[in-house]
Image (tube, rainbow, N blue to C red):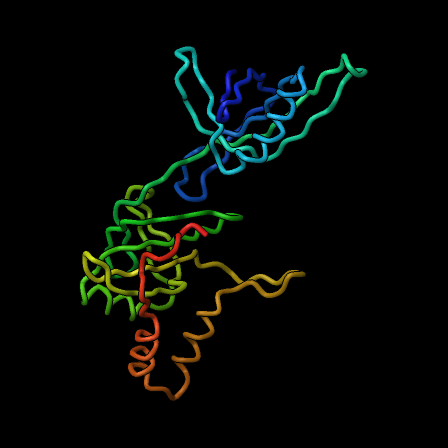
Length: 240
């Protein structure tokens, strides 16, 4: 099986294969364990460097037509030197996972429908988190400011199945094209406690506090909304 990572090309044998369901779309993704030999020092050094650089993707497999077929990321890698110098050979073993490139054409968060011009999404330990930027009307922005609790979120173009998510936060501001919002959501999940502390969204406790305390909830919403205005709504990357 032929692979290419940047300028590094090599042929590897598949020693193990399997599948796992994508946490983002539910589609099956291939998992392979491949191995290959690096007989020269330059090839060995290139293999070590590329294994580190391709942990998020950029490794491609090629078919008989010599055209890229699938994109992969390197999940694990190791090597063993077999033989005696200078006649030995480095044997490399990579555990690779098929990369799933996604694009969201429309994002529905509760009652609000947005068409993102900037979108990022990741799944860690089965928990999906997303961030989006979109132009909005005054009515849309007002609706976003009122979102709370568990929400049905649909990422059109990725999956039509709604996910139960929380609005982690939002900011808004003016662009040359008009009013825009940047927001983040994450899957609703049970809280966890581990050595690194308590893992749960703080917004849930804040929602309870606002709901139960003797507060003017509308005044609280307006004050919070005013603080969420930013000078440059496009001034940072979403995928950080």
